Image 1 (cartoon, helix red, strand yellow):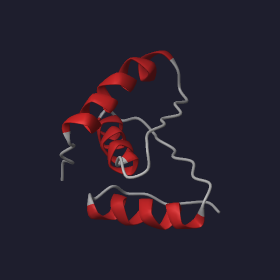
Image 2 (tube, helix red, strand yellow):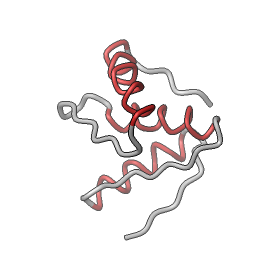
Image 3 (tube, rainbow, N blue to C red):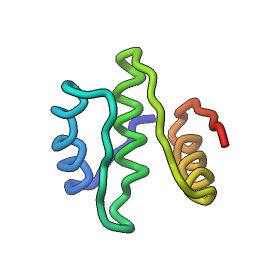
Image 4 (cartoon, rainbow, N blue to C red):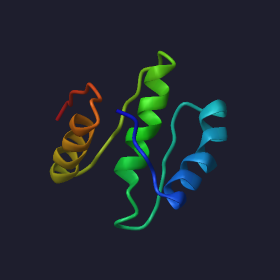
Length: 82
């Protein structure tokens, strides 16, 4: 299932796409409530469709749970190491 982003989220993804071509590690920052997990999920969907492997590093347990639920809702196969 493809994730539909809001216009600002789509712009954020468009802004980081050139960085993905240059480097392997990206740190994406946006305000609380922006939908960073949705943006990351969409970026991961696009990368996996190209056969790439992705990692997402989180520093809080509740963020791991939130991200896992989002990935599950969108059919993104995932696991985590804690």
